[in-house]
Length: 178
Image 1: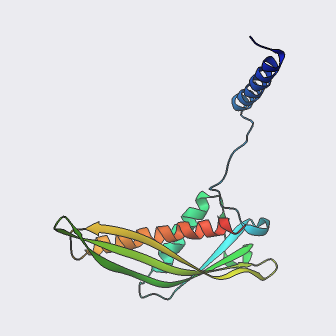
Image 2: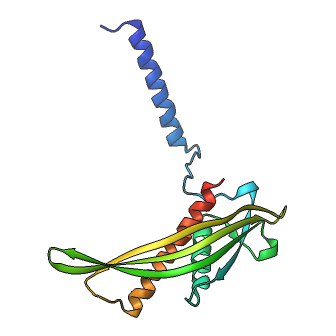
Image 3: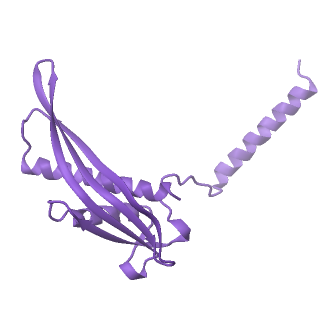
């Protein structure tokens, strides 16, 4: 048998459910933007400066292209150096791969581990202050095969995937600090 308390609890439950349904139907505009990168100090734009201290020619250009794509996907405007609110300077310090021998049920296979090393520096150009300096990041990619050596195309593709991982980690670093 229902008492007055059970009826009151059920009414509150249904009112809450009705309210949530109404918000859902009306499209209240509430959105979760957990993956959206936001810049510090209400900055609206960022300039990129990338130096390449590796032995891989053009790595800075590839990273610039990939990072611009990632930032554009998050609605961050990449501007020329002096007109941007922030300056993100990236030092590419290493680009390498290693091979690890694996044995799977008497079949020999190999894992190639690719890494792209970088150090980040972020400066607010509006007040000429460093937000952070010397943050190390490593982009990586693993490739497993039965071949003992990789061809030129596999080397290039795997290095590019490690560079894409580095760009994602830079984007994550930007959003975690603020």
